Image (tube, rainbow, N blue to C red):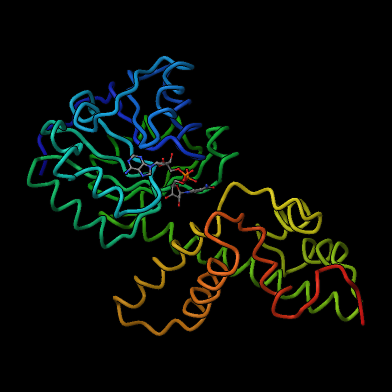
Length: 307
Ligand code: NAD
């Protein structure tokens, strides 16, 4: 058990990308903020625009902070940033401080990192988010927290600056498990909608009307409601979440299932499908571009109509 339950007033923030920047932006009024990103110019321009200081040293981030928030591409990077022998948060973090990993990391790695940090009397709370860049900008993210209950309670005022719904999921790694399973469900919803649209289109249905019908019927999901008409049918493909990140998240969910020796065929085929998408489209493509998979496989663009 960790000793300190002191109020968090000084925050270090690592990872100022699509999500991290708008999240850190919501913290600078109420907290003393120090920021870091591997792209040093990002941290410097954040500090220039906010009540925050930038540093190129992770040790300094650790030294400064009651809590360090990480918003990084994956758990391996979080581990390296935290424990890295050349420069890591661990070189500066004090006993009683807490690491809040808001990245979508793999839960088994999170559990191991939590154990490693316990040896230094540092707590780990996993608190990944859903709601995308818009949710990050508005502070309306949904946050799934795992870790010791008193540490999650200690972090709650910080999390409440960033999200509207904060779910306490249970022990270390449960937040990251929930996040991977959520994105698996989202990936299935998006893939199923694309598949249905391309079949319907060839049968002479109008894709725009199909979306109207789905959205007032039992086939609707967050993607049919918020993404297909807005980003796919008009081919703007304007979603700030990438194929690479989705492939990673579905891979994490499949990895959990495999580690538990469970039979999950839809999860396996969804993992393979998003791996194909990453190969075909590249990791930095928007998730909305996944429709191009079915276009490639069927040699026709969505909206071509019946043959
Ligand atoms: P991003 O690639 O835009 O940002 C990641 C940032 O981390 C970059 O600025 C990068 O320079 C920095 N970084 C990478 N390695 C680093 C290191 N070793 N040290 C310091 N900084 C480093 O990614 P994002 O879209 O902001 O996503 C961040 C996390 O949030 C991911 O785990 C992702 O799965 C998750 N997430 C993203 C979204 C979304 O809509 N984009 C939504 C929910 C959750």
